[in-house]
Image (cartoon, rainbow, N blue to C red; front, side, top):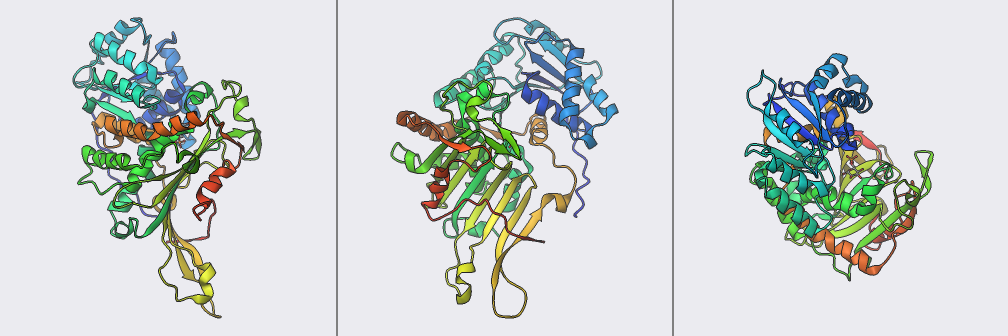
Length: 506
Ligand code: BG6
């Protein structure tokens, strides 16, 4: 195992994080645990505050009790420290505010304008962990009550709208209060360690970049599979579906990082400019290609991890006969010099057999074989970037099987497991991103033009589905989606990478 760098996390200025939707699932499950873990790591300056805001009439001590429960539930046991939890809870405050009326806003303003005595200045951040319909009204109120200062920042959770027009409307409304530099649109996939590692892999090594193009790559597969169903989020999810919930944002961001040119630096605009070019190069999937290039699925009752689970239509909050997809598979192309003719196969779904996110770069077969007896055994090289769980990078190679008796070839993998190599805990994506906002670094956040370009490509697919009046194809929970997803890739003479081959450690 390689020792991790012992460089201490750089000190950050004190902050006031005001979390709208402060009692919601995201705040309790992700944001508060992430802020606690950063506090534990020594990154939260004294005098920093986290102010939960929602309509619920809670007192600050009720909120602290809720936060404590959330930390105990969602922070790994070996990271819970009674003393540090108590210190973190001290930083918490709560103000009941109604986003759509004037109720509570004066109290919030008063709280923000009266910081703890011991600190000198602070970064003011508003985190909108609410439904996107409230982004505009909240920003209007922040302006009306004088809270949106020139130095403050606003964080928007996805989804930014449900199509191009609604995304533009939100962006306009938020943009009327905050400048683009003050707006941080979160896509938490960009905060995942292995996603950032794509940049290191591609641009920190000389090995791959010369091969990273249509001359050497046959196709790319991106799978983001989940075992969970829609849980308590049926109301939101049924209005969204897998394409809006996962593809328009997370999977397209992964496509960008795989597909983009080398940015001139890691500076925020350079990286975002290159991602934008990929989004703008996506070949539109028009009405004639919908049937051949896309598959929608919806899970039926089945079994996941040995336990019976209900079908989508029997989940709480799902209207009878809903036609929302819980699975999507797509074939897309990046229409540019580097990638012309290389298909990217994407799939994502709920209630699949495993929680697993992976990018597979499938190289072309060798040009000429000198191993006639091994003809059927020769497999083209494959690079697999496992985003979660068990973060790793594996390179599948052909090797000679040891022993006498001729030249028998066998595939094996070089396996760079991050846990084995570096050890320790990998910070959750939100830990990185929440602190990037404090730092004022928006490299890993989406710019307005990126979000809109992603909708521009995704919306015709949704329109195409609507025009065809087709219900999603059923699949049994615990399987890899409808059979049409397998057909989508097999029609091209390829298969999804669901298998595993033995790996040899580096
Ligand atoms: C969210 C989606 O953005 O990402 C959820 O809204 C999904 O539906 C989640 O479950 C998946 O994130 P992760 O980090 O668990 O892969």
